[in-house]
Amino acid sequence: MAIEIGKFAGEWAELLELLDMAFSAPWTDEQYESERRIWEPDRSIVATEEGQLVGHTGSFMLPMSVPGGQLPVAGVTMVGVRPTHRRRGILRDLMRAQLAEVREAGEPLAALTASEPVIYPRFGYGLAADHQEIVVPKGARALRPVDGIDDVRIRYVDAQESLARCAELRNRLALDRPGMFQHDESWQQYTISPTVVSNIAQASRLRCVVAERDGELTGFAYYRTKRADKGYVDVQRVHAVDLASHAALWRYLLEPDLLSETHCEPLASDDPLLDLLLDPRAPGAITRDGLWVRPVDVGRALAGRTYARDVDVVIEVVDEFLPWNAGRWHLTGGTDGAACEQVQRAADLTLDVRDLGAVYLGRPSLARLGRAGLIAEHTPGALATTSQAFSTSRLPFLDTGF
Ligand SMILES: CC(C)(COP(=O)(O)OP(=O)(O)OC[C@H]1O[C@@H](n2cnc3c(N)ncnc32)[C@H](O)[C@@H]1OP(=O)(O)O)[C@@H](O)C(=O)NCCC(=O)NCCS
Image (cartoon, rainbow, N blue to C red; front, side, top):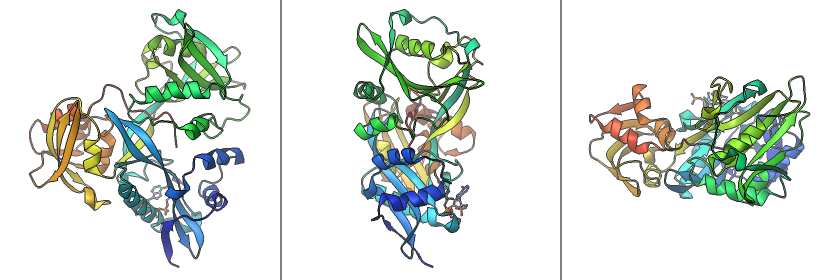
């Protein structure tokens, strides 16, 4: 039977039936409803067989921070193929159609979070941001001293009522953190919806505390608490404009009466908490994959960020999935901006597009991938200087899964 790939003209209920089956129904109706509210139907691409939906991929247009600026990024989501139709190439066809459409829309990058990390590298996605999962026992919560921490007041507020103020603070901070995207009103609601508020049974509803100094909002945290044999605080997010507020929020979250641990995922891999805990083993940090990035238009993507030092390099990109990216790209630029065009000159470096996606936001370093044999250096010294140019002072981090 022929499979057709095309735009979706159906209703949410039809898509829901497919996703519910594809994902083995892990979500409640309430969670599906919060997904529906952020769904962008015009961006849905489907596979059908005799009119029946058998596969889907969707995306959001996300204004995402990249080093030195912001780019429109296609945030790929709700990828699923009906269990009866798997391993016949439907996902591959959906991915190809979607990336062609993303290119036409003028979005130079696609990004996603993966349910299974081995699926997407074959389509040119590289792991561009990781994060930590931590569990801090109450007995090991001691922090190093932080100036000004006692001047910060922690106050309990209603998450819905304080949403706009907290979201504004978080959007401001997102501008300086590669990988974070701006939350519009529907994403703001999403951050306090049942989908992202992790699905733990018998947990409290979402709680919000704000940090204030002299009446000014300087940070906030979302969390839930769970009473069980080993009760814990489940921290959803902590954002603060300064270190004292950040530490004050964490000091509060690490002191739960009647509970014995504090859990958090995702925590940025360079979060100051990891350096402030007196016992570096206390968080038992586990590194998890976060954001996967796929350059869709290599020239526009490379020209769309800034670089930590002057760069003048020809990079040969291998891209078997999107042939328009394959070839040699001359990148020039520095801290103020960059230009990139396709050339015929000999290359200084050669790498696969997935590895370009991996290093694009500043982590891991090209030098590290070079040591793993993933980047070929044709001009001595080019790897070290280009690696420095791609580096960022803050690690990329995705605080909102999609
Ligand atoms: C993941 C999923 C979308 C794959 O769809 P599919 O139509 O079976 O995939 P395809 O047949 O197009 O496979 C393309 C390639 O990916 C590989 N692949 C697909 N799913 C894979 C998986 N779960 N693990 C490892 N490899 C996988 C295939 O082996 C194939 O490899 P090849 O390029 O070497 O031939 C489908 O299995 C699914 O719906 N899973 C449950 C929901 C899910 O996990 N969605 C992803 C959310 S991020």
